[in-house]
Length: 239
Image 1 (cartoon, helix red, strand yellow):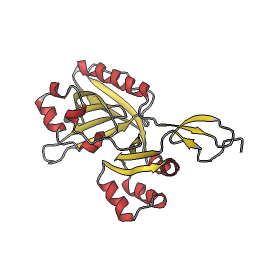
Image 2 (cartoon, one colour):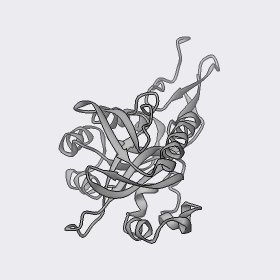
Image 3 (cartoon, helix red, strand yellow):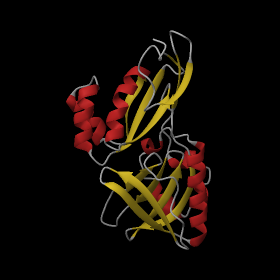
Image 4 (cartoon, one colour):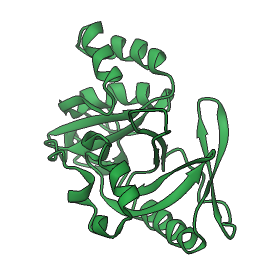
């Protein structure tokens, strides 16, 4: 098969089962155990840089099985920029939110665009709900913690749409390794509809799904498949 892009890179944003993912990657990556462990421990990090597509297809199943949050980019890695450089309305955020978001590692946004940021509360912690082209993020920093933390809900794990919003809350249903989960974020009433609309637009745009255009070496048939289901073979059914 001839592929549309020569190289693909993968940024690992998060994974609920790090050890299980590490063991899986050790069987498919041409790297030492220590290098793989360091890449996982340093999330968000670039775990595959300019891999050829046939190699990428072989390891995507490991990320999918462990419900890891990844961003796939074609060709090279985009520059790692802080949020104030990629979110056009950053200056309109409250000083409290700006202070919180300034501590988020820039790699968390690699390969993504940010459409909406609103103040929100989750499990009695105040923070920011960030809606990107690939996922929903909740960022907070407890008073007794020096570092910020983040919850990531990728669109690939979400059900078709957010649950019907309430006056001051947004409910998100998704699947992780433990099954169906529901997270409820409380926020100002005016932010609920803004957030729901931004999520719908991001899911409809499908930027989080990478398509591979393949051409059969035998008959010339061209097909388009998402990266996790693209064919590995040089020939289609004609061969």
